[in-house]
Length: 239
Image 1 (cartoon, rainbow, N blue to C red):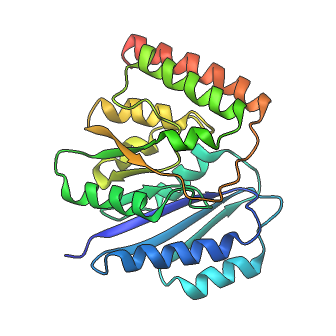
Image 2: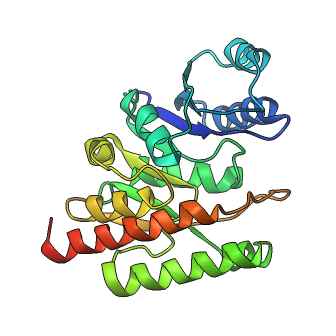
């Protein structure tokens, strides 16, 4: 049987031209291996700008298997992805960002690894050293700090938890849907929960050229600090 791959993209105030990039990248992925079937799921996480009806119409016309989910209030990337994963029925689920920040080779390689390796259920992208050469100082500092904390306190099988490219087999879907964190640390929560039952491994990925990084929201970072404390407490008591 032809494998079905669901691609889930959260969308919040996307940059100009986002719909064109989505269609172009979707077409390239579809052409990479004609034996794969794809479905595209985009979740509009309460965008206040950047999303027009003409964008949705354009994607609908260009992508035969496409589902659009939208709600008015911004809830966070974790919440948005849960809404998308809820709709997934494929053999493989690919999670990334609306601007497809990683190379085609990175995405295709990750999907192929999930389809061919029986001993792994979840793959988490691991960014190479080139990523940090192009990252703003604050984001770089936060990423490296979190990697150190995750490695020391949670002892996960992967440390680059915040990479915006992850894939899972359908068997791990219920675990993702049981996550509760709505914003940045949903990745950590999912990987921590998944590692208790399944094989979770890192997969090397490369950032594509031309990526524009968004600013980190200080208020949200403070909230996420509390989420991490709660997550660590859950890991300590074995929940």
